[in-house]
Amino acid sequence: MSAELTERLATLFRWIDPGPGTSHLVSDISGWWRDPTVLAELGPALVAPYRAARPTVVLAPAVTGLLLGPLAATALGVGFVAAHKPGDGRLPAGPLTWAQSPPDYRGRRVDLAVRDRHLGPDDRVLVVDDWVRTGAQLHALYEICATRGAEVLGTAVVAVDCPPEVAANLRITGLINAADLPG
Image (cartoon, rainbow, N blue to C red; front, side, top):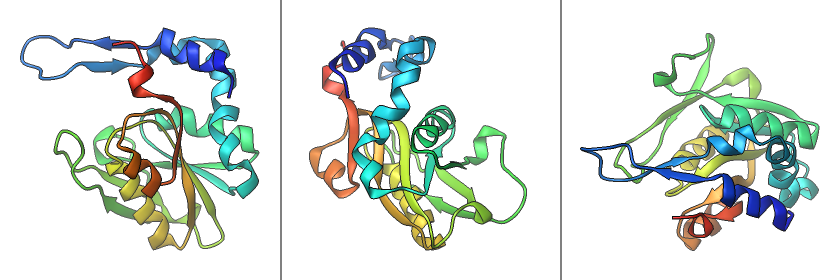
């Protein structure tokens, strides 16, 4: 990955104060999607550490993953599978494999589902997402892959914000460390 991409990611990032009654700032990554150079470089940069492992599919959770997943899949020349959440209003019809995440950094558990027909025992899966803090959703996605008999190669994220032991356990690579984003 280029130093220029890392610098652009940091420059285009913002923390937003959502106002009274909130206990934390919210990450604003919308600048990443607005920049055509970042969009062109994200897919290839995310998949670079996994290219030699020859993934057969990219799996990513709604909502931001629906943008990043196809960018990564296109860079690899493989297909994309979306992991759906019941609250996003886009649950597909047909048989689904479900898993629930352990509590995330706010104590929430997230339900995720993947269409059965899109993930199977012959798949070598690269999971892609924008940000990882606790790895909670990744645990659910890895569980879905195990249930479907698919092999998870690891996870590529834009921003790594988790402890090193979580990153090592879930085989996470990232393009920028959250500590390097402007505060």
